[in-house]
Length: 408
Image (cartoon, rainbow, N blue to C red; front, side, top):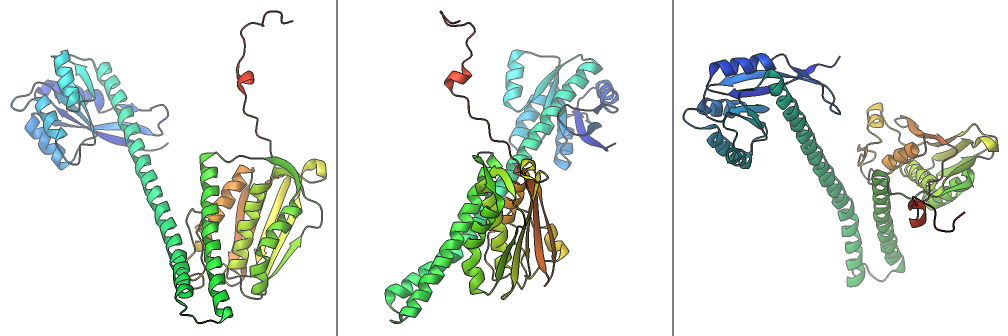
């Protein structure tokens, strides 16, 4: 059983008997709220005046404030006004306890931040009901704020990554263009060609970043349109291999495809291409010159002789990773940074896209790696995907309550 989370309740009330009654009714209360995980109990603190209440709030703000309307000295409503002026604003809920439950008092108290009212005299059941309502509202409000802050941090992190990843290639391309414009690199065509080639490489990296961001955004938002077709997985793999062959050939890296039997599938070709492209790009990028990349395929649809699952392996002989690095690998914007990878460009999004696509296709992705011995990624997914249901048109959505005149 999970531990009970304790919420602090401060009772600001000048009548000692009333403070004791509240303490008795609340101190043993344990709430279990629908749609909110956990159990919640209460620790009750007391203050006999608004001035004492202010001191306690300043020392340690409560979670819920039970505030008497009529107090000696500063009144409850005046205390609310003082609290409303605080910066940063208070983060607790206030319930007014009053024997003067007039509309005018309610309007004034609400304007100054009161969440609810409890009319005196009240029963323990009424007090518990108000506390249950207040606790639910408090917890949901805090969760909303936490999610909003988390969203803000993610957005900031995303923008920081984009700026960082685009700033360096843009600066490099700008530098090459100025060299070409000012003719400071001479008239040798080979030098010009080298500057253009380097600029194209930088542009390719920026295009990859933008593609990864678009893929990730569509997957996260659920707005990616799927086109399920019958295909042969080896055909998709060959196209992806062709896209990395220029860089692999330049570095003497051999890329092989091992598909001893047909691997029939019913899936979205674009999703499979994204899986292969990301895995193969990494396998070449983090490989050693003269190394190897092996793509192995197995499985397939049941009606094509397979077992209903597809297994994709992409193994390389590259720099590999330590176990601690592998554990971080599939996080968004995560790039393994060490002395061997410091000069290798990348957005840290590709493997996150692979994992989300594997989940979308009813599967999972795993990795085995060791430093200086290479890495093997294994993606296992369902061989048959369901075609998305077509969106109903106006005629399909309209269901007449009675047949048209003359209808059979």
